[in-house]
Length: 139
Length: 112
Image (tube, rainbow over all chains, first blue to last red; front, top):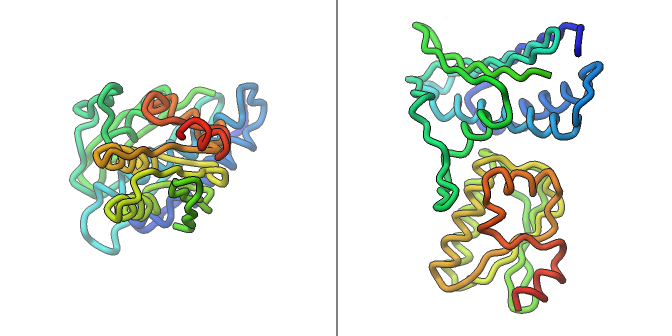
């Protein structure tokens, strides 16, 4: 059970070279969360992975404007970790993303599977000025 | 992508010198493996000792290499994976596709 409040708000250009930075933030947060009784190393990897996948997804769906950005917020309050990733692209239909075919694995399409599997809630909302991928993990 | 290639025991062994394989460097890895296979080096072992993080695009790059090696009657195996990295293969069931060896010696002994 965590009582402290943490808010991180980062804006990056739509370039994959920033994935390391975003993933590292998640990893550091996992290692510093107070009073977390679970597997801290696993949580660190999972937050690194989920932030990396979500940011990659936003970059992939971004518009072609070189000045386009992705905003990532991470908020922890009580026992809820909330990640929001904002993109300005055309968006996609989260519900239509299929589960991977484990018997005939493909080279792509595993990112959303990771997010869904490792986190507790995933939604994608299209708004007039941006799209928001919201991910919740209960600690 | 920092890596080097060594020919050992009839295999092309790719040593990855990166801590992360993600969407930033995985396209380069994918192209490198593909190029190697096109040159006729179809028996490949990828040494992942330094890799402590892999994402879905990294898994995809390795899977692409695996499929291309198999298509040319070759093989592509992995060696020296950290447990956290192995867990990504387990989560995606790709541990059923790849041979994952503890070290290069075990890889050479079993693939021979």
